[in-house]
Image 1: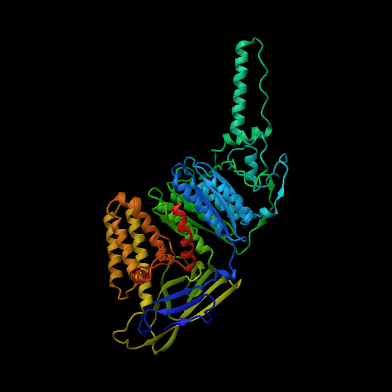
Image 2: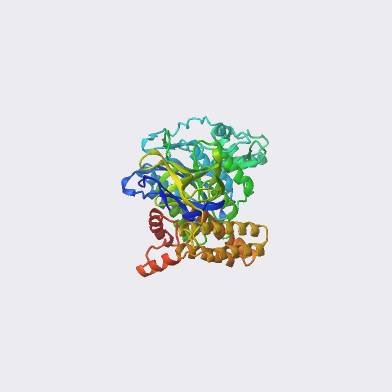
Length: 603
């Protein structure tokens, strides 16, 4: 028995019990609460605006092809956004620099931004926390600049002082505050454009005075002090390694690099509010371990959670880890707290497709703030909820599940276990009510759908009853995700034999399911690959940990993590074979965007 929501043109909600018929005696029953998002047609133009900040690692290890690919990828992302979207860019090494303020992606902006991106250069260490918090700050400020409305500003006119206490502290050279810069900096004058050159000039003057003192009995007058603006800039540069401390005394992040790229020099833009229903996101990229700023995973994850909870603006955090050296544990947990996705990129040519996959999802959001509630009926108790989302308690012994956003064509299968009390009479009975509430992006309206959950109860359960294949398969999916998570935790503690045994147990449970098809084959393949990359600590740390984090979360949340190519460029025979042996959570928009991005890798 499957009960559907009344309006399938909106977000679909379906109740499917594992067994259509169950006994009148006390028993346990699992059911699937399935959400299905409608297809969002791009041509309709009805989607929420994107507000995106890319946070890019430019440490020394990024030198060469990696940084070149990242720059090409950023330019690609820029060109995929419409004139209603917003984009900002933060770069970080030891220092953090807001390279591009959050701006409307008009044609004028795209031309200027592409030039600035192409000039990015590698630096030193990896202050990941500083870059992440600066990107988050850009989104939570909720302000963007429309450079098409900007006005010329005389070169001699300084930018208006910022009202932000942190910006004021930087301007005065005061310690214990992060360096920051106003959204629209004034055009640099000849005195302040190159502080290093100015410092060299001062040094030359000092040498000349010393030589004069050696040849003259009359001491020369001291050199004139540098202009106030130069004094201020030198002071900021000398103090840019200071750190701000939060209330608990823990390190927050290292100071930002006050030197900003000359973005729209000579023009002042007016900050405007980002749309209320915009999809706000941060893309965090790194190829190594955090070795500056906050470097402990638990501290960084806790701080990110705190900052996200304190803001009224919901921001999603997507993380992208390249190569063997980054911490999958750190990036995976940051994405989990940030309601985003962790992407593991083993090869350089997968950098563009991973970014494209994430962008394709954001561009196809069909429903926002999706929340599911189950209220049990009389004599029914909820004993478990199996999903990759935050679960809370509700009145009457019910449960709430915060699903968040759903992309076009996505499905979410939430497995719920209930205990059914004894019943004297047979019949078709209600075991509870499912309700989903959300913001319909296409219709720009708040929606609510309710489904009555009914099962048939009999005194004599028929022999040979067959479980619903869909419920069985999604229970196997959740078992796989749980097995990968448990094994990863054991491996992190050095218990590799225990980790391998846990993976074998999950594989045996998946093998035992009677359902055949692409999903079962994919679960089996992922568990086997995890075991192959658990042979020793070296193999686990360089590859196994990353694969297990990415694939575990993909199965838990039913969301693509772009670890393998899909069906682009394959013939019909190959497509049939792939569908029988693999399974992908990617939607049409993600696949299309990845196909577009593939050409970047060949440059």
